[in-house]
Length: 622
Ligand SMILES: Nc1nc2c(ncn2[C@@H]2O[C@H](COP(=O)(O)OP(=O)(O)OP(=O)(O)O)[C@@H](O)[C@H]2O)c(=O)[nH]1
Image (cartoon, rainbow, N blue to C red):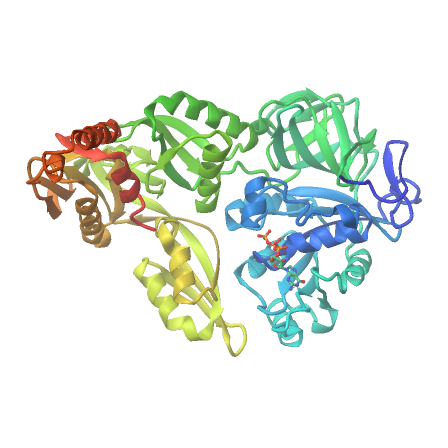
């Protein structure tokens, strides 16, 4: 398993790391030798690999026991090779104590990135030496600058034959203003240059500032639920001292809790008596719900509270919604229980019960983004052993009514009828795309076909381009990312941030089977795309719905007007006609099978629709 570094001992509440480690309490200025930093990088540029190498090099984890990507602990993270939950660990390097704060790499978790950065004085900006700057590199660099952090830039993967560090160092200098000769060159895989990187971190990133005697102000920047300990939060102390016996006030949630344990990760969790200014560790305070200890919370002492919380708290708001239904209707209670448990760990998921004529009882769930949605669904299926149908993802709309009221619409069924509607607003994003210049035309085409408006176009070098578009979120949640990748052979990268609301001409489409609307297939789309959506959905359903004893019309309608129609022709033969009379056991088997299949049929407008048809049809966008 894990060792806690060479000569690790506990003194006076602070962890002192010997040999390579730095003593937080031994120095005259306890803050001078602390460095708090985060490694930020575009996805796959090697952040986790570098974290692993640093753990190994500083002796925090024994090389023999090193698992790949030590800090990514969730199964799904490991399989997908992405980091979802921020982790943080304390290591020692040449007399310094370094807190390494691991930030999530995906845009869906942007707010968590921002909170993690608020706990740091600097970042290591890692760039793949064979690919150069990508969209998230820019987003990360801008965020670091916004938080006023020192940027230590490093080109990674210099061991690759395709690496061209000189070229990309020049690119970084031009685009981000970091002098090329200050950019480190490393290989997180072989370990080359990693020691020099740690030296540069200690030299260039400033130590934290803070008042030990002031009232306590600690920033919670991550929380997860542990089934034995309750909520475990990552905390960075800014002022005062967080002591193990304290009664804490969570300033935003307005709750008081007693500290059960505080400690640091080396990376093994190691309790300490207190954490002083500039220090990073974990906090357990008998909390049962992560919503009470969200990222961005400020903790202070109940007996001597700080006059105000630290800046910048924000409630994460779901951006993407979908209905989740158990394939087996009997699993509804199990799904509710699973969602309750999952939410203890992930306060950003929202859910409320809903009923669908076609799919039965389920929940309308809200997510931070598409990847978040996929992860939650996968965790529900995997960790709670459920089989689920998800309806097409949608965004939140604001419907302004003729009587002056406003309704938030998370589901096509909540859309007010056209005669009551004054206008509808939809959420927009500012999307930044980085791509080789040869794809400029096809990318502009794509953005325009998704109702995007160009904000800016800039050359980052002779062969690379930055495109910035304002684009409706609804257009991005569908399959924008896949389309972007396939049109550019995977070379373009995307980052985005919320950019307000705009009025749009949106309509609700209903899909009718034999004259009966099927709520699961309703959608809100832009007027210009209604025809296309209707045509595709009806065509797809014609293929998926088995023939019945009569003709089945499939129609798409907008406010009572039919915009597309297909027909499933009546069948002529029944199943038994295949069995030329003779073999009775075979006939029986066939009838049994048919009965089995029927159990999984839904009856809509006298039409028998197999469960599978719903699943397939809802995959329309893939
Ligand atoms: N050749 C080579 N490959 C590397 C190096 N560093 C990382 N890789 C590989 O690059 C891939 C991505 O590395 P990760 O460390 O998972 O990247 P990441 O930035 O943590 O990715 P996310 O957690 O998804 O943001 C993996 O296959 C690594 O083995 C390096 O220095 N050289």
